[in-house]
Length: 102
Image 1 (cartoon, rainbow, N blue to C red):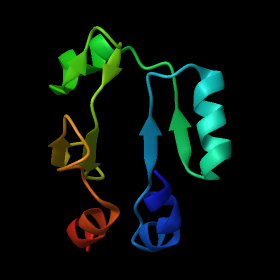
Image 2 (image 1 turned 90 degrees about the vertical axis):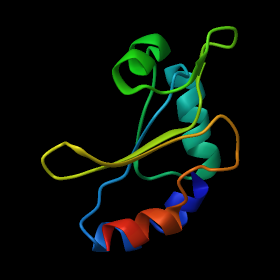
Image 3 (image 1 turned 90 degrees about the horizontal axis):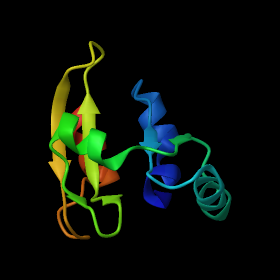
Image 4 (image 1 turned 180 degrees about the horizontal axis):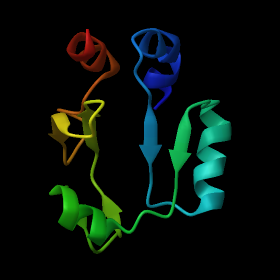
């Protein structure tokens, strides 16, 4: 998330909008926003099971989490690219996003 914050101006200069969503409570999400100094939108309280059913994201019932899931959406709302990761390797990096959106 901090990587994306550090390149936010570059993303915005390409007419991209960045949004993050979490299963965390409002309080926990706000603490993360403050700790990382995030200025982009961060949603909270995501129902992990509903999200997984609608998007195909990997989830873990035991911890009530969604594994890292990233989407690049076109202006019409369709998915241009999706990445699902169960660990730190293979996540969509900010560099990848910038290359993909041009």
